[in-house]
Length: 492
Image 1 (cartoon, rainbow, N blue to C red):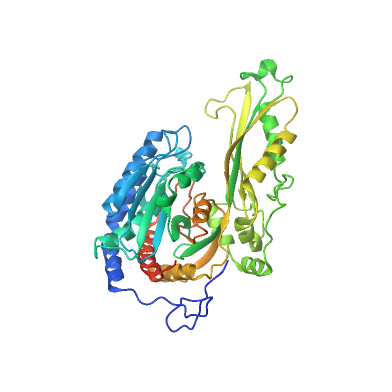
Image 2: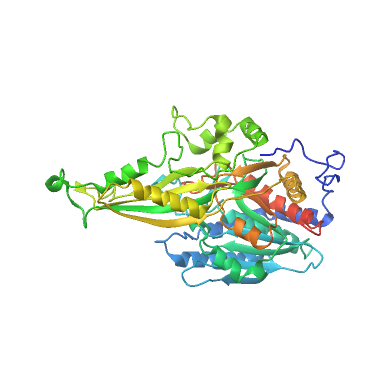
């Protein structure tokens, strides 16, 4: 992680890697008009976001795919309303959730930016734990609650609001833009490779802006420089062809729930260290400077407040290890376990038991290699005689940038600072965005600028997900500045 010591200005004397002065000039009158428009119309953008949040566009299997289709249609309408052209809903086939595409390409001498977000969402989780309906957006204490408010329908509106601010005032953008809104990010973007190959020319750009990340804290703009990848499998252990009475048969039958528990107990120790053989063989070692910078970060109070860790229960790592463990070290999670029904529980021996296990991977781990090692480990520790089924669910790669001091990232940092009035932080992220790595590689390693609207208290993927509305407004203005600032450079 690199921290900028101050906000750069014309007279600060700082230089880029080429030895040239590093600063962004004052905003143009066009940009100021766009900023003023965004301030006056922020309530309208809130309403646009609420329309999207009301659509339960859960992309996971078992949920109604028609809702994701409706979400794509509503997203297309947002893009069209903003003034974008050639708006399309793109399908690979009937089994793949739709993408939405739009463009504005009227600046032949300016760079082209590809703006990314996703319109699918996670399941609501335990609805009884929500303080309001997850698909009825509700404002409380300066936050908007609802599934997808932050992850990632606010990312869609951040793009459209910035674009609209220019097109509704001066009638043009400072740069060319292409917008792609994905419909299957929350299920691992498994069809992304095929989609990129099919639409490579349509998506071709000089740089990518991804609005699907988080700030290190509320009110502090952040640019993400690294993402973990994700490898996931479903484990099913079976012993019987139907559940049976535990009073009649208990004592002589093997229990699949206990067998699954035995398998899961071998995956990691009490400190969260993964015990799968060979899992750390290709791990990229941190430099001494990285270790030093990571160890300086004070994250415990943020982590405890954001996660709600029970009083008296310690973290599995020291605070000086937090950044390394979260951003540059693999982690294993048991995402769900199921056998029978809590609501319909009875005195039976279950016929089978199921669990979803995932590993967040980091540089230089290979997702297919990790998938193979995890599967082999599960097969080797399964108690003999049980029927075991291991089904791969995801194998997406990690991503990182080599140098946050490159000019494009410093320009983006300065742009955000104008909106947030705070120094931009360069941070890692323990989550995964499968879209980033294949897109940057497909176009020869173009830079990807990862920003976001979330903060540590967003509760993405959990109950009571929410968006801090003041940061949402700043993120829109940050993108308005960014579009103008990035336009000043022929090669982004």
